[in-house]
Image (tube, rainbow, N blue to C red; front, side, top):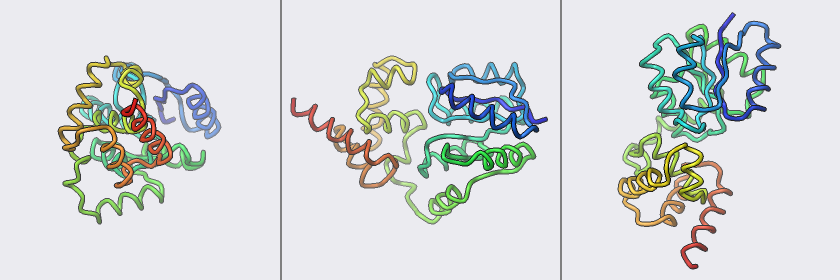
Length: 228
């Protein structure tokens, strides 16, 4: 039996995954966690073979966690299961040490296949993800401003351009608004931009986040707030 730990902050998602894995008959769910800060300790206590990890969790950035776990538990296999299908998240996850990457739109059968493949020591990506990886290798954009952001800065940037306030972002990431403000300052410095509207326009123009409608609504909210 493959020992699996599930890390996702939504209980309904965890319950659905457990149901799928129980039906497969070859997995033993040894732990589940809803807060990223608790993952390292639970991995140590439960000793899973595979960690099924959402990238967007409170308490700790998923990309940072992959790096931490890779160093502390070299034998642990990490399969990312996330809503993020953007190329920069995919590339960064594999650079951090992930063994596989799936989006939450994947079918139950593909999740089982991916877990089995990763548990045997392989690397798994869906066809759509593989296409984006190939495209990123063909495109020379290493000097693009957003490429210089850290994993946490990228997450804060994404939330900023969706129109989330510093307080909302701080609550989601379990940090202080002052810390988020510091991240925002670093983002603007690295990207050489002076305001929120520029950040949103850059994201839309370069298609670095795929939730385009959310970004457009965020841009409208930011423009309105700057006029009042």
